[in-house]
Image (cartoon, rainbow, N blue to C red; front, side, top):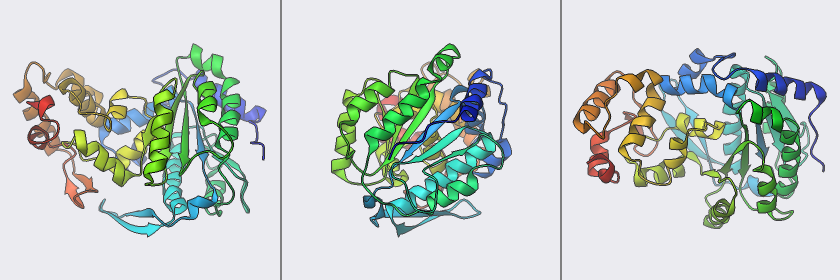
Length: 352
């Protein structure tokens, strides 16, 4: 089935969002984001991100294979602790989509959720964040639908490419980008995804792939696509596996659910993309700490290249004032950062 096109009203909404000056923070949601557990720097980043990325598309795989029960439903308690229970891939993705819908609503961040396959009882595409109070109910119906059909991802990418092309010149002029998040558990059933991605990445876009399976074959497929991609992809696993991957090179960091969601949302800071690729270097660790806890630290946090001990002490003092975060691996609350652990472990070269 052909993907629906944006209406004239939707294009007008997007054009208005593109025209907003970067830094305007026209729709702040600081209190909401704090309640979601984001530290002050990520609250600051998210509040401004909709100016830099004024439109985002979720391409959602709702094929039959999403019924497989190898997912994890995460329940976040009031105290911030997280428990998990087995569920279908679709139910796990539903949790993610629900969070992003709520954030899009609060930030008034124009976001369209597009199903690959038409489903009973819901619209195939839902827009949230264009107008307050419009879209979340329809998104809940989309989430409540049943997976059906194959994986026509190429057609979906072509549809999104055509929509972004309509406002591409305005994005370039404003030095902004669109965000495209592909949430899938497999390979496309309708052709070579590399060709479709090549056309998409000619445009001002940032592309995320959110895998909905632990299959090594599927991960291998998308890694090969990444290597041949013109603009590169940021490939994200589910939060548990992503935490394990990050720990291989950066075990000084507690990789949290909210940090995972920020990456899914399309934060364009390169230091986030590097977390699961290699150990961060001292200057990059400093950059990451500033991203977590606020841009004001740029003026006060010592340069680890010139004063490593001063950097470690200042970071330790900073963390003493920050509440701990739920550690998915250790299943308890820990500090966001433990630089001493990094010096003992995988990031020793960076922090010694």
